Image 1 (tube, rainbow, N blue to C red):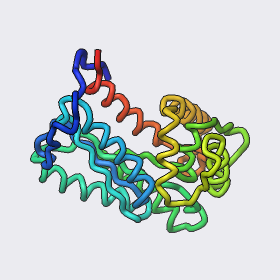
Image 2: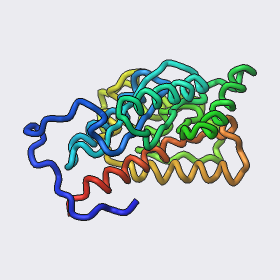
Image 3: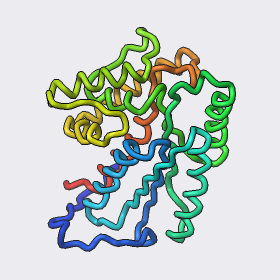
Length: 240
């Protein structure tokens, strides 16, 4: 996306009353997550950043946590998009579903739901940002790359690697699944562009090898969603 040009940032954000109604905004993004805590918290941080640009009525981002499985997340995204469109009195510009593969491959029914989530997303124009095995892979890529030649990385191992990397910067950090402090630590790195490149590399390797999403471990498409958000921040928040 091209930059907008000379757009000054909000000078003193506390002096600007933030609009409460989504209909005042010109661009609407909906992100529906499997996780009710960490993932939602991560994308809410982007919503906060959109509130800080000028004009602050430009981009409205709604992050929703569901606690549902992969197919349930996509179905909920369709429901939430309808509700947001009615509330905003305009169509939603981007709708994303964020979910993990985890150990769904161990159940025939879960495999079917996982694959159907992609089909439904394609039919309903809901973009998919899945992670195999889990969202923590995206967080880990802010610190280090992963070589796909080493094979699948179980989510417990991802937790361990993530804790090890964060403790290099904060020796008191202890990773606890579902705790939002891991997001605060990752955001301190300011390494999102590096993480995007590392994730794109993994994704391209799986594409080249013809791996289906449920087979593509390690992989995360969260980088595609984050790339979109970063482009919008650059476009509307450019201070040139």
